[in-house]
Image (cartoon, rainbow, N blue to C red; front, side, top):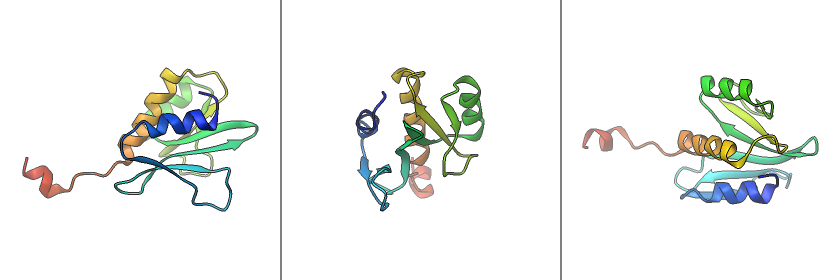
Length: 119
């Protein structure tokens, strides 16, 4: 995955996902959940590469930042809970897609407590 279109395509594979362009800057594509409107990915060009901001548990994000040079503290986001993945060709789709999936799961609508207790 190297292009914005390829990153958007991967994000749209998740049920409930849609793409949004809420800023006046068309460089920013925001991927959201239909059910709660929360963002799970921000896709943009920065320093000549496509980047994706993704939500990550703090320890998981720290792990990926230590494993892959293309995973860095999130650009323009809370650096404790978000990471940026630079699509520079150093990570395979098999390495990037699980990070996108984790972000999707972390931001999806939680079932309310009553529904969980009735199970």
